[in-house]
Structures are given as C-alpha cells and as structure tokens.
Length: 152
Image 1 (cartoon, rainbow, N blue to C red):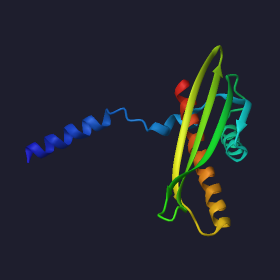
Image 2 (cartoon, rainbow, N blue to C red):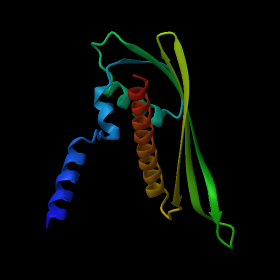
Image 3 (cartoon, helix red, strand yellow):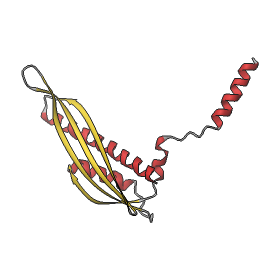
C-alpha cells in the first residue's frame, strides 16, 4: 500500500513539472505581417495558399515577412490494368517557397502526393481531383505557417 501511494506521489510530481507544449501551440502566436510578393503555378492551389496565409497574417505588426512561391501540380499515371487502361493516378504538388525576413532569405520546399483510383464518371473525377487539390493546399499552408512560427 505504501509503495502505491509513493508511486502515485512521484508520478504526479513528475507530471506537474513536465514542460509539455503541443506542436501546434506556436501556430496561433504568429506575430508577423505576411506579404506575398510573387507567385506562379497552379491557380487553384495558389489561391487557397494565399487566402490561408493572409488569414494568419497580422496586419498591425511591424515585423514583415516577404514570401514568393512557385507551385507545380502533376497528375501522373500510377497503374494500368491488363488491357492497358488507366486504373490509378497520383497527384503530386511541389511548392517552393522563398521566405525573406529582415536581411535573411530561406528556401523551403514542400512536396505532397496523393494516390487515387480512376472513376468511371469524368465529372465526379474532376470534382474529386479538385477536393484533393484543396486538401493538399491546406496541408501545404499549415506546413508553411508552422515553418514561419519556428523562424520566430
């Protein structure tokens, strides 16, 4: 009985002194004004990236981060069946960021891939591909926001 009480007291003591911080806790503490100078590549993905970055920008801050980025989207054939018709695709998005803060410049490349099956209905396949692009763009914007929080 005494060992159990002693073990509970020690474990509570260790847990109370633990300096645990979630990975995403710095994401809301982004204290920069983000200015997007130049962008190129896929329009749909770029628009989502720009809106997500502007949403996290603080317009009243004096600290400024300039961002340039280039997005490349590719839809590759991943697999074919025995008749030679396409069965699987792979969406590949590569985004190259150039982050300029004060006098320093940093390059950052994000590559995201997603595999999906070919659908019989072309309209449904286009909508599904658009949703994939949207999700990938959201993932990329989260990664760049985390990167900007680390820069601080």
